[in-house]
Image (cartoon, rainbow, N blue to C red; front, side):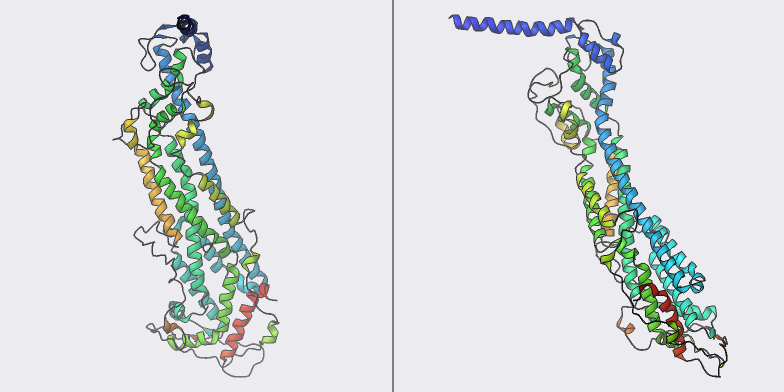
Length: 560
């Protein structure tokens, strides 16, 4: 009989001891005063000892070191305290992808500048004044490519621009080949209209059109995606917390002050429920955010492979030179077809050239570009290195919004186990942890959330992400739908049927017949006398030799 009696006495003493300690703390609110003032508040707001807490609106009523005025100030503080970790995480994410955007954008712009400079230097060195006199054609070509990269189809129709470039190049070269004639504008319009049928540059224009379209659409769309990420994060992270959220956070973080337990941290599951309620709208962004990131990752794979911007731009001068070589090889056939379709020019009886193949000094052969020798050309890096790095960051950013509560409710912000604040006392948190998203908050035990009123800002950003994802998917197939949203981007054609080459069987071999424009204008004969010549008609061979000099000069840097 003595054992139960002893146990009862011990239990009573423990209860009295704990009660006495809590009561002693409430009789002396010094710890609360110190903690409260450390937040920047006036220490005089805190009573010297516990007072009647009946007027309190958020924290448990009873004997308390808190007042209504303290509750209001601590509510404001709790809003800042909740916003701080979310803001820090969001700022880090914004900074990361702002930096990635700047790196990619700088890289692509420098590639364009380097490609233009490389072509210019090579042509000036090997072609001299003849190139300088026609340099604006190539300058305009690169300016148009840059405008397309920056502004897309709204600024430049890439197909039309490329067609015009090849037509203009054909016109200039046709005049050089047939220097013994003077052609009217109407006659040259006839030549230009049939550039695709003539195929003077072989298959280079068609292939280059496909490569440029895919590479530029992929590059500019990917950069737009990188630019969008910081914008979305900024707008979503600045969404204001609801009054019920602020109250819930204040209760979780500062109500322990009222009982004198300033060091007591919330239970983890309690914190999760509060933060999931506060960040319910943000969590609803997660699905479209992840879809967007998946589309970015897929397009990054394209940038590393068939849509590689670097592998298209680095050798573009060589590709244009190859086209000129094709024109040189086909010069006689092209001229014959033009004369047949647009009108036969009269030859000058006084024209004769003394030039020969020996005078060109050409004894080597064409050296094609090797992608294995692709240099690091821009921004001190390569596209492969940039994409490898950004893919890691994109993968890390997945589920950012849905995992925010777990990220916030970790480390020193919570107390492990059962020795934690559960919203009313230092004890285990019994409620079930609810799911993420607005719909799940109907059963949130700690935050009152109106699930019928989704946040407008976040809903608008969901729509923005959906649209950007559709552009990324289109770019993955080589199509730009950022302007024409009605274009079907799922066919995967990637512009393969486009190009200034002719794909029909009629374009294979044989004569090409095309309609002659009304009054195309018969070309005037432009007599050219080189030294002392005998009378005669200029041969087609002289045309080929003239163009040969042009092509070989352009290709000199790539000759062995």
